[in-house]
Image (cartoon, rainbow, N blue to C red):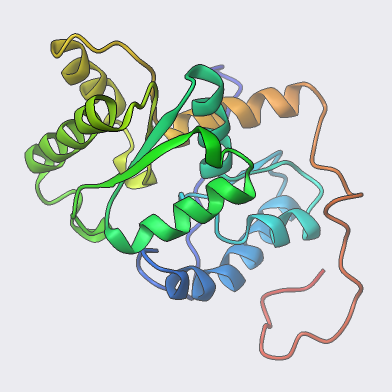
Length: 221
């Protein structure tokens, strides 16, 4: 990364401790919108939403003018580009429909080989790193050998830093393919978009008409 790149993190003030369902995602969106507006006003050049459900990505694009990257959208398109078919390895069964629906929305459904789960909740990922690595490796190998995956997308931003170890586990089985870690890849994408002088289209993501927003004191556009 360039020495000029500065990364800051914002935590939402209201919402769930983790996102593992549509319910969790819905509750997180107002807080994400509020923090995104604040980040732009404080001088951020781009925003990355730290969740593979891409919660609030589209409404945030409407209310800010800087680039907004959803790691799932970015990683799925990259997986489809780097391999003929890709698989997503994620946390729980409850997340599978969300990711499959996103693949449809992002027009990569035909490239999605499978969504595999490791059955570890998000808030327990750091508690047993050895189990996490073992489950990720096992699911990734199965995605390749049984589902025909030619690229692996780590389907939770809580898997940050695991890609290299999973890649090595695959190589030990004679499998060489890209393993995409969404957050660092999204940082590279965001930096490139900013340097290219680009952002999302306001023909697609137009600023909403001003109106009263009852019950949302932290959101003003």
